Image (cartoon, rainbow, N blue to C red):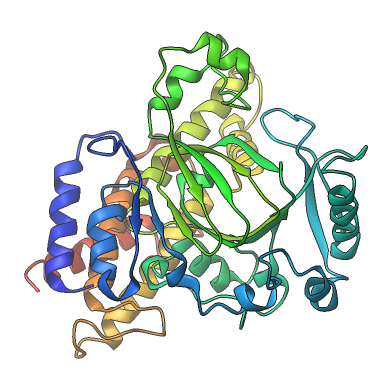
Length: 419
């Protein structure tokens, strides 16, 4: 990030104050297709898609050097089962049954990859049907379980990735996934975890995406406030004839889809398909994540409100339930902000002298990006510190204390405003 881009981004967020997070300025009537890597810079993506929070599709030219596109795919463009079996056959993977609805998702089981590929081959031989149902390998943490070297190269457009930076720092988890499944497998209607961004590359096969900009999902809620499981269901289409139509994208082999923050979507595999997918959060959608967490906490509190006056430590139990349901609570969110903030402060301390475009620790982060990140963290942290439920937490063991960290960040923001 250069200084001009940072100033542009800061001006953008000043204009966003008071708006509901994740809302795009205007709803596009199509999804842009980015053809050539040489003529599309990080700044182009940042200004044109990341900040306005709108989707786009990158051509297969952006991923043509990936090892997975060479090794995981046969010359005819199909999944190379022999290669996958030889290299990953014994790995245990999560598999969802697309034919069974469990709330607004699908039940999962775990099995060795070789068993799943055996099922997949039989499914194809039986004209894409099976008494076992339509099984879809989803959320396989290949990068966590083994080296991703040679599998893919992280596109520079998505290199500011706080979720995976944080979890890699803790060495506990990640939000990098492999999906693979036969024609007819699909993912029900949803928005991504924490209202994160995501990107998805088809290593082989084709997908159909149905995108709903933030807010349009509200018209799809039922009388109980629930969102649909399948937006293509005839009963829903009949009852919602005046609802906005989704943006539809067909993603071909090798192409890369950018999914904006808070956009609900549904995805169908039109062919036997393998994809690599990442969820990610950074300074551009941090406020969306914070807004989502507040919504999640309010939902938990409403659900258990009848016990508020009788349950000891009711607020503490709400935090426990929130983490169980959402994967994070206010305490961990503060820790997340603290880790990223301290890493950016350290970066600025070490890099007071380099040029604006210099990479830091291989992440493509220069001083201008770090400065912008600190400003965004400071704004969100100020809201966190003022939140009544955060103030109820026992923060005596937090180091640094939240208000002290906020003061430090605000001092850096003031000192770097004119840089």
